[in-house]
Image (cartoon, rainbow, N blue to C red):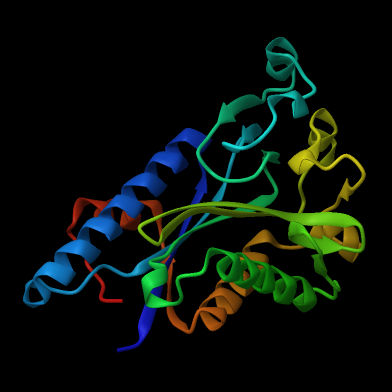
Length: 247
């Protein structure tokens, strides 16, 4: 049976709201996976998901990160309309904001491969191919996670995996206000710069078009059929259990 991944474009929402949606999707996928293993005749597990979101200005710190890499006080963050949130992903501190595509894959790696490092390389490859579509030669730097153009980071990554079901994901700068990165040590790396796809392309890029290319490469990379055109309303239906798509 072919695998499928539902692509939900849920727009701009606060970080905590998206985090809650991810946790609920992850729990739903884990619960249905375990139920299906125990009683296959009761139905098939729901499909994998990929959420596209944008966030209002927010700095997030992974569970292994250093809070000292945030260079602003709470009062100063308020002045720039940003908040600071500690979360449960891997990695250090990063920034999310308007003009940045944040992708949250909720995948059952039992359907693909049970190797977290390979999973991160697959996510990197998706972004590398997307950058190539817009004339940008991107790649990796040995020992560092994410996608780079020369010595400039264009896409940060940090994930969490439970019972081989993933959450969190990647953040690709497209038309992001890069000045917000000046208030942190991005990903805890002090000797590298951050850039964006539009800046490197030398033109303003359509963020919707970039998401479409990511979706294509994501489905191809994971050997899945993409079910696109899904909204926040569709996602809430899925979480309510009223929609179940076989994977």
